[in-house]
Image (cartoon, rainbow, N blue to C red; front, side, top):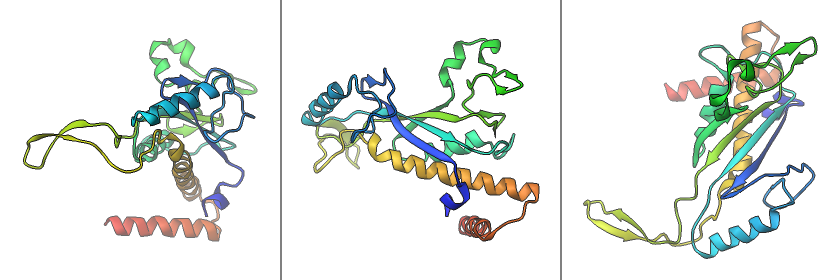
Length: 230
């Protein structure tokens, strides 16, 4: 249903950091089971993860998401900001602990003249804001990154307390993920799709466009959700 509404909108999600390793030379065509886009340090990364696994520990990472071909004007300047809704969806995923759009936290050290996305006749000359200005999509590619914390259930003894408040040592048993980043990739894409579909249908509603059967189905699902919450 979401794919029908999104049409040619393209969403990609991949890790740009896993543990202490970061992408240094991005290669879109490099394929592997980790969805890692850097062939220069891939072997060292796999060796590093093997050592982490053998020690019973875990590592986190950073995932980058890109959205292409999204219509201009999606979102609202106050209550339905597109970046705010995307942030809520992403941080609702387990282990998500931080998010940034465009240049993100690097904007803190820029001046206004450096950070502003200036325009000419061809459109925006930069994309420091990650494709969203004032809560509304501006036609640029939407780019954001979010932090995934290390899997908390590790095969290493750790201090904790019992229900009665007494200190004790706990060691988790069973199978554990060395890095949960890979499992989060399809989840993140699914959450993004749901947010974008809501934004597209909301825009159709306020602009008075004609709905088709798919739009009505999505609207009914939204009403069902509101009823359940009530």
